[in-house]
Length: 255
Image 1 (tube, rainbow, N blue to C red):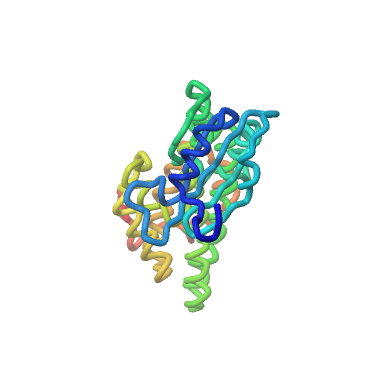
Image 2 (cartoon, helix red, strand yellow):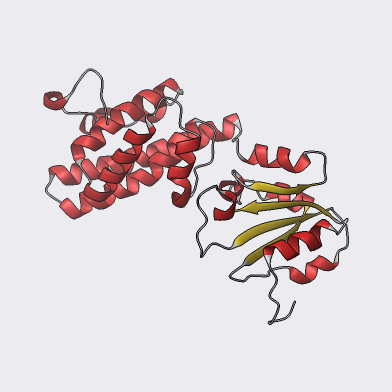
């Protein structure tokens, strides 16, 4: 394509679909999430070619424009894109445009959207400890009158909290942009989506110590039910500062 005729998404899909070397086309990003695309959204497309296949489409490798971003990979490379540290978060809700492998592309995406049991357990333990650490710093700073520090630590804790909650369900945490989209369509079991999002919003903005403690009470219950007692118990008496204070405690903590 020339500068006068920029490569469009539809034109490239037609071109790729006609190439027998292409075994899959996978759309990710805003265009793959219903209702999330804006006039500024481009099309982020994975082009999956058969291992050892030759194709003239490699001339488009790395193509980036306001309309279309292309990633051209072999089938083996596409499988590896979902490994830890890869594109798992981005591909978990990707849309299949073409699958010439009798559902193989769909199966790969499904695997990316589901963490392995051991991987999820280990990840959750790490995120739980990180969450507790930031929360502890926040409520301690609040106690000591360090308002800014308390608020910043509270905001840090929310990142770790969300990673934890999704890991407990063996799901990769979505990017912040897609958090509300994800929870509206795929809620976290046992959590009230609206209440959780309000708590995340308020804690990030204000560092409200009481709300942090009540949220921690719910998280502690969920974490212990998932088998993470050792991580929590390692905090010893410091847990008391993270839990709801006796004078404001209730039998059923809420957000």
